[in-house]
Length: 453
Image (cartoon, rainbow, N blue to C red):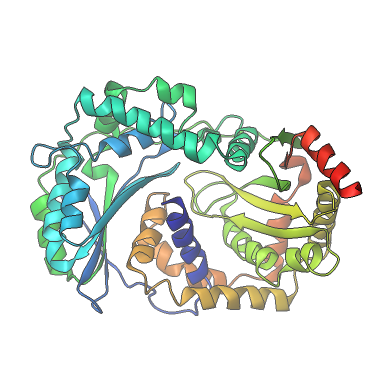
């Protein structure tokens, strides 16, 4: 699920390079009387629909000490309503030839089904019922908590790279809840229970805190009728404002080293606190998206300077996701080639960044980045999930439908000067977090001795 989400978020960055046009997705939008926002992206090429409900709540909205409750509730949402017995939701969808799943992020939680168009009424009825009539027993809740713990064990605790990522986030965010893992800290997950999960549900799961997004073979009139039928009668409820602790100014470079016997490939990661589309110095967010492409595409600066030829790195890249309710991060990563040190890689990376901050980017690099993004954008409109994902991620993090539609024009307008200004604003090493993920020292020494022999 995480890989699927990453791919779809990449589509949003990709379609940013499309040529200027009046519309990209040409959505229809309306709001029900109870506050539920509805977005339709029509696509009549096949009799299929993507039905998604997004809630404007995620892991960063949890109370202190209850990390993981948003994700735990996501699991419990499949445990039954008065008309759908526990565990039957996904089975019903599957029997209709469809598929379904859910996801939790720091800023939002989503539930989706992909079905034939004539099954849309069915999935809307079931999704609407669990929006306000979730029924979970202690007998279902307790085992599901163990499922969540096992998920953390398999995906995080058994992966030194995942554990390293948690430590980097915790070092980056001193105050903001983005520093907590979405799945939760293990000791706090163990302290969760049905009462806490249902309190979270009653606080945040309401139609006036949700967005219904449908992509596919359905007309606006048909969708409005179905939305009113299934969601329109759910009463709105008071929802607390999304007030979160914000980061204090970072005054010093932060560094950490993590060693683990399971590590076979050392790696370097660096993050900088960066603005998003809706937080911080927002004028830099679009140029930062272009800069990330310039640095990390297959012929970009990081590849040319760190990887190609006699460069010290086996791989290098950058990542920046502008869609976040609060300030996000601009990330760089690299791993050394066999026989090269991670210190050598970091020195080379610092040299690339120093040149960037001194000279900026070339017109060729700028045009090439936009062309690469334009090529990837071809697929954005063709994916029902990708189209719905684009709007869901944007609308739950403070953007409007018009802002999504205008994104290609914003990228087209980015200049070299804007990219340089964004880089100088964000890529200050004094405000960075740099981490080295390394093998245990004994293991590293043994490998050196084997090489010498």
